[in-house]
Image (cartoon, rainbow, N blue to C red; front, side):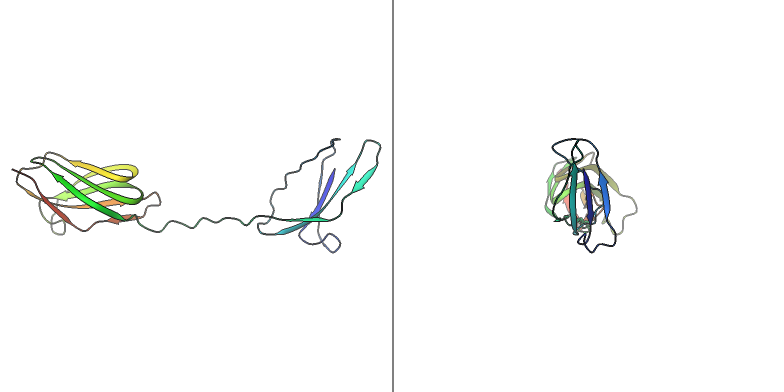
Length: 168
């Protein structure tokens, strides 16, 4: 079997490509690679049997699919439902994001804008429901914290500063 194809009608094509499969069979299949996306190709098929009888098809055409280009993700996750479940020496901070992302809380006993030393709790698993535990906290103490979530495309969302006070 011989397949001849081009990007214009074979009658007027200046360049054609030939693919030959000399296997004798009643059914043929040829995979064409390196074709241009969203292009129309014209082709004819010629087949020769074991007695050297040749048959040629009429010209046919097909159009390749358009190449799907995935747009890069440039949007940060959206943080919502931020809650603190406060105890004497620990707190559970929960929140949700609209897409899978990591979990991070940075906290201190002074405003994060002015403090020189902070603590962080991080979970690198990509999830939409987040829950981090802050432990070994001082009782009856005010803590300042910010939440950060990063999606799989490295887009980061950071909350405004939040405050909780541990119980006595």
